[in-house]
Structure formats: structure tokens, C-alpha cells
Length: 248
Picture 1 (cartoon, rainbow, N blue to C red):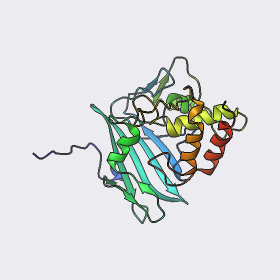
Picture 2 (cartoon, rainbow, N blue to C red):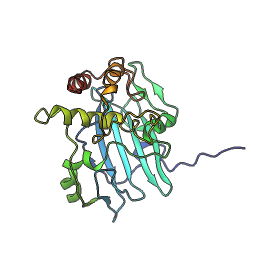
Picture 3 (cartoon, one colour):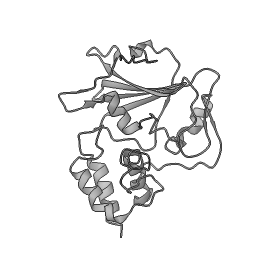
Picture 4 (cartoon, helix red, strand yellow):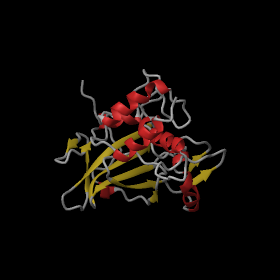
């Protein structure tokens, strides 16, 4: 029996003609010190809606673009497209001339160790039924006025911001919890890849002190997160190490 792969994704990144709006997150996922450019496209006459601190409600046809660059060279652009049946993920690899990027599903590892994920690996972090991760309402709280002004967003409800982990005017605990939320909570939750463990790392979750040395050990060994990075995040490690010393 032959299964046909039906995709709504274009073969080239330049084939997307939709108008896009840039956005930033308060605390980004660490990705081997790459620079990231984030863009969102909402269909005409539609809006995404925010009613709580979780993921916004996205209309069908929403496209999220995230381009990864290193030293000014574009490496890949990851795309999430909202279809009638859910989100479809695709990775576009930039050509040597930096003129366009092409859809790739096989993934690859570059000479510098940078890993371009396969579609299967996308599911590992984004879930079996793929969902966006970083664009939670609380992580784009500071962008809400600009997104509303652009005409693509409606927001209501009791909203609160996720701290920027690099903002030293905020308490160590809040910064560390924000870092763990963005980098770890998409797996360490009741429905995530690490659901068999009772370690929960969402911003508001209780962090059991029994795990503090294990968390530090895995971060020091470069074993967490499992995918998406092969480098140790020195600044993130220092932050979590300092936070762990405060846990009883």
C-alpha cells in the first residue's frame, strides 16, 4: 500500500507571497547562538486572538516563519502552516548564494555541527499534533500593542508577561523559570515527550528540588535539550546553576 504525502507547503521559500509582520519573543529558545528572524502571516480580514497566557487562537492559513542565521549567513527557515486539519511543518534550507531556500524533509548536519531537523524531529518538540512553541501570549506580551496596531491581533483577558531571562532587573527565580519554560517545558509537561517523568518546567510549575542536580548535570553535559542544539549554553547554564543554589 502506497501512502501519498500531501503537503500544502511550497517548494521554495520565495513562492510565499503573503504579507508578513515581524515579531520578537521575550525569552527565546537557545539554538546554538544563532540569530533568528521571526515573521507571521495572517490571512486578509482575519486575526489571531489572545484570551489567556497560552497559545493564541490562529485562523486557518496562518504561517509562522523563523529564519536561523550565523555570522550573517542564513542557514534555514522553519515554517509552520495552519491548515484545516492542524499545523504542517517544513524546513527550508538556504542555498550557497543566499538567494532562496528550498523545502527539505530529510534534515542534515553541517560541518560546524549545526543540525537541520527532519520532520520527525519537529514532532519530537512540537508534539505528535504539531503546535507552535515560542509564540505563547505571555512570551509576546510586549509585542501585543504593535501586533494590534498592525491589524492582525485581538487581545483580551487576564494576561501577564513572561520575563526576559537576560533582564537582570528581574529576580533570579523569575528569569530562571522563564528560561526553563521556553527551553524545556514543551517536553517536560503532562503531554510532552518527557511526560513519564514528573519533572514539570512550565513557568508556573513547582520545581521539585530533588531534580536540581539532575537538571544541572544534563545541562553541563549538553544532553538537554535532546534536539535542536549541540552546544552548551554557557549563559543559560550559569543562570540555572545560580538558581538551583537557592532551592531547598
